[in-house]
Length: 116
Length: 117
Image 1: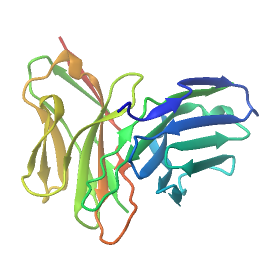
Image 2: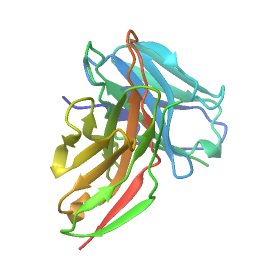
Image 3: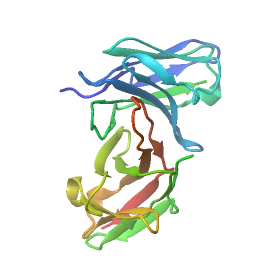
């Protein structure tokens, strides 16, 4: 398996622009997580999905952030409009969710976002 | 609310010496505990986990962790450090509860391990 796939790996944009980050989870995994990592705040959970349904989006910082999972093999995280303080590395992770599963999460390589 | 604390931002150890990266947790139930490692410009990689049973858990790359319920700790250890072990290490906790189909992990802030040749 190719693991969790994220694109793009790097994104540089200007303030006010829309940014879309993409994630393909590991095939067969039922749960998908979006995280943000910064030096100041460490690793923060933004939102997670279970069977394509958003379960907890309390970590989404503002209405400028939105996430979708239209099917089991694809998710997007959108920032509109972007601001310099959104600069961070964004990780996607997926996990199998089966009875008795211990729910290890598998992380993608991340998208490094820079907002100028 | 569940939380984890990694009291050391950085740990330095000489190559060949034993290493310990500390983690304490706070949960209102039985914890599932995890250690992840992050190498530069990479995503987090799973190292090991404690669910139940033996308090000493063995994981990838020769790492092990000891669960101590009375001290609410889950310290990561390795008998002999390698330069290639230099990375950022994260402890995480998940609360177990019945009947739910969803959950989340709470991560510590991470500890940077530097192994000096």
